[in-house]
Length: 181
Ligand code: IMP
Ligand code: MG
Image 1 (cartoon, rainbow, N blue to C red):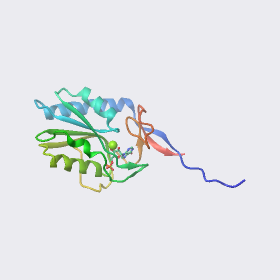
Image 2: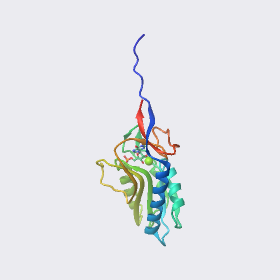
Image 3: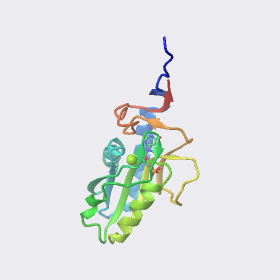
């Protein structure tokens, strides 16, 4: 029998953040964001698809009149960030003079959000703040920090609660560490 190399498969492993912990933290973030924008009508700009769960849960926890919009950017192939941003044509909407809260699943290299923030300012946004559920502890390729962070995590690849590995595992209730098997 010829020997064949088995391709590595990525599956969800250890639970890093449970559904209950996510819920509790999103509630706290909702309170903090509400306090900051009190009396304003901010535009919540969700970065799809990863921020899908976080955006909708966060919106239920804020007590504000918000506008909601979504954009789609893709900078990942497998587990490596390409830094490439596609889909910015969707930014044709009117961002001029708006106070915008960018809502994303995770801040990793920072390439995606740094470019997005720059584009929003070019389009005349009055203010751009960032709210992420997760922030990875690593050296960012561009100096960017989120204004609100759900959890700081180690530099591990995670899936669930909107986060995917090549389109898979977004629907998991907990955030789990991706493991090779
Ligand atoms: P950045 O440009 O490297 O900061 O990439 C940010 C985007 O990459 C996020 O919005 C996610 O969609 C994706 N990403 C980064 N790290 C992970 C991860 O651990 N699991 C799933 N997606 C990730
Ligand atoms: Mg994303």
